[in-house]
View 1 (cartoon, rainbow, N blue to C red):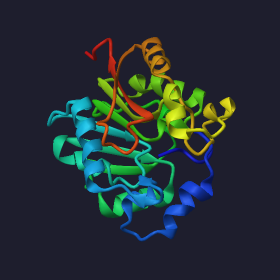
View 2: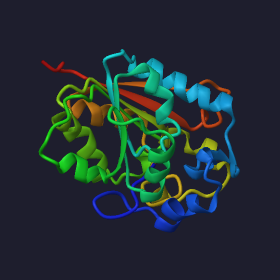
View 3: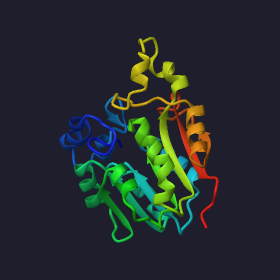
View 4: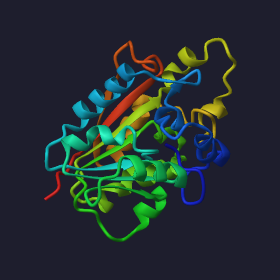
Length: 242
């Protein structure tokens, strides 16, 4: 989920941090806006996301997963059985409280309220992290913050081999989402907008390559609720860790 204040992308705090408090404590998908027309997506849709991430990151029992902007951890916990350790970060104090209460399994599966810039800027490294996930949130990062993440995450996590960036709004297919509604070009490039920044597939590939990653673009099945205007990007390090 997107950052909402200092050290990261700007997003209306009342919408991201306060809105989840108005919902039932166990309405996990509603809290993180994994919804269609306000209703949480069904189990089949969640299963498609989980399958896509597992197939993209190729988990092994020794992997350590970093979940960037993890929200309340409802998606994160689906991967616990595939890995050895987990660290989820999010800027929302409330959602992290939900994650800690319902899904944390310390000391190996933990969550922290932390802004992305704080994590990247910390001089200490996290050698346990071998795979990373950022699902449904990358579009809410400013261009500078997105570049910071792509370029500096391997320095923070020297054993990182793959980064899965999921559910990216596809600039080339924006019309399929908006239909006949007038689209102002500026709104498609604003991380503060309701959907965030729309990026082309070629833009993601060029960004990844410039930072020392290869990039594979994948699409969800046609039955996935957002398949007609979003794509996933799987980044792999061109230089393998020692």
